[in-house]
Image (tube, rainbow, N blue to C red; front, side, top):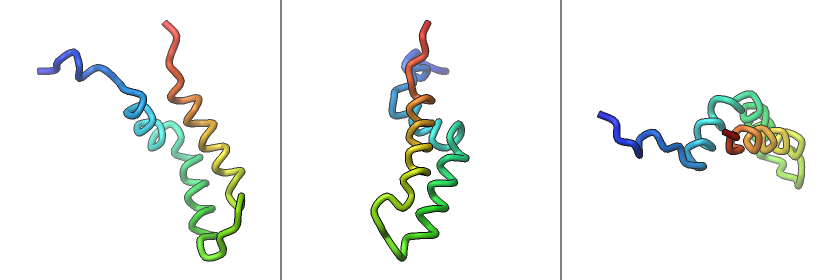
Length: 66
């Protein structure tokens, strides 16, 4: 049996859900960039991928109106 609190989706839960489902393509691209460059770490080397992933997450976890 579910309690009313089981249906509450916290911001952290929304982030976790969307980072692995809604934004999986962006997360994968960022992860591949990090993996490809981890031996030669330089500032902003994966900045574009990180920004796309972050933008996707911000859109996904934004509270829905109504």
